[in-house]
Image 1 (cartoon, rainbow, N blue to C red):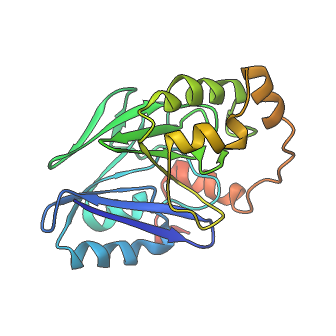
Image 2 (image 1 turned 180 degrees about the vertical axis):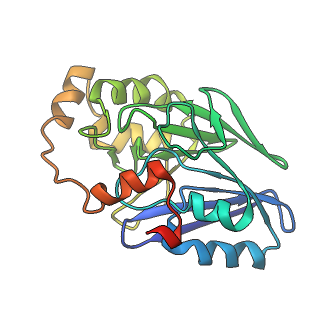
Image 3 (image 1 turned 30 degrees about the horizontal axis):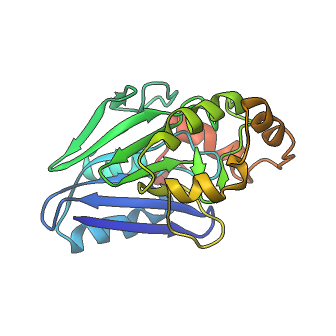
Length: 230
């Protein structure tokens, strides 16, 4: 299997390129538009054909590369069915599968960070978007977020995955590349709570400033802007 984890230093975003092998079809999760050329070069080097690209949710801290990649490769743009994006080719339902030549992902609807957040489970790993971070969880104070929904997504869905499942988030701000469900259960300070009310109290008192790119990124991602439009 080919598994490339790429990082955008400006927004601390992780992007994932996945394929079952050299010369085969590939998919990309959570691309950043400024790095489109880098993704294309990785695909060319590994002789991969990009056929699908997924955003885990509408991002507020960067403009997605989903639409530029579609323009360049004619790949299928995928998001969960709750997404308000106007340019999605395929909207995935909760528990629906995404297949790319011997690679299978299962979508899990995980609202809370936003109302359109989905995670994707692949064999031994899960791509958690902003729902579950390494030693943290996604904020819940904009884009129809809800700490109560986030609690249910975390404790009712993600933390019920096998404990050895690898966790690959959409962001990390401390140089960490992955974790496990077991490690997050035991060590993530946001998850050491006994009720949804306790979790909501933590999340409602974070007092975070808005992402610097929010006013630009959210409308750009809803409209599907490409490099020649930004």
